Length: 407
Image 1 (cartoon, helix red, strand yellow):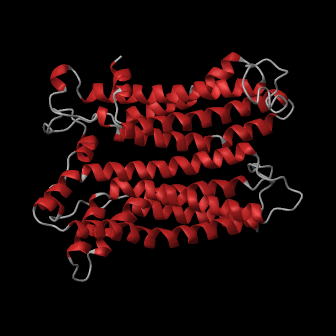
Image 2 (cartoon, one colour):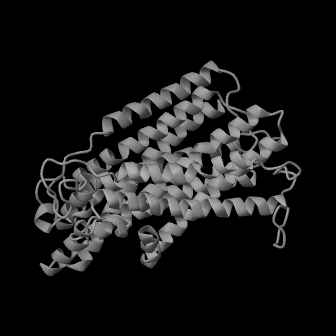
Image 3 (cartoon, one colour):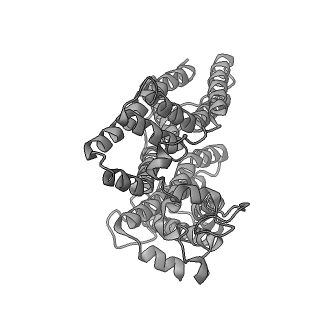
């Protein structure tokens, strides 16, 4: 009941993020159900159904990633002073965050089921009733165990991932407002930085940059080697295109993971570069804020770059397809919209969360006499610096990733 009250009592922006999570869950659940419908209608093509289910893992991962970001930024589950006295310690708040995420995702799964049954013709009285009878195997009974299993993927994975990410961690000393089990990660994200802390020594650099670069290089090497070896047809691409070697797609996944891991480190280095060579107040402020927010902003930026490079490579692949190849279908388009939309929404959520975490610092700087135009210039400089660093990197990775796919 407390989780339901937190869901109902959120601010409009918080409710909008929860509705977006429900919408993403509905889209992913509908893709999973359509895979089940294709398997029912084509029992002889078990391999094709398995490939479709495997490709659903990409929007599923994007949806879970977005749901975790929304749960992390939910103000209703933030540790606050006085909550432990009424039994809402860090562990209870983590449980509430997982339950809230499960509620939103379950709502989306139910909407996906209703829409799926409506298109099959099992539910009548609405527009487009039974519009996809042939595609969704309306002449065959829908197996209840398989349907429920597919619909529980998103709620279980999203709530479980939220509980793991937001779990309280044992600390050696009591933390402010959180007790001994205040959760080091969550405390670091919720405690604002004062102006003297912002201009003191920067936070330690993220440690994932070498691993990200190594995975990026390994992925490109695997793609190139697999394309030259020509290891069979491999997995069939979405939209009806012929398959590419499985090792090429595995290299593509390694490249995307490398970009995601390298994002925080590149963001930190971007902040360091802004402060180089006798910086002024705007450059110093922009650089220090980027370094402070490298962990929070860097990974979503890296994931967006990975998705953008993958979208560019896929567009090049479809551009070199033969004229007889079928075009992109509605389910492929839905999967692409889910992946792109969830990654962009995650980046926007992280940006809003970072701005809220800097609210006290911004207020203190304005109180000390800092011009508001300088703060806006620092924000624009941060955005421009990130674009200047990540745009060429994304384009280069996309070009290198597309070459093996069309060779």
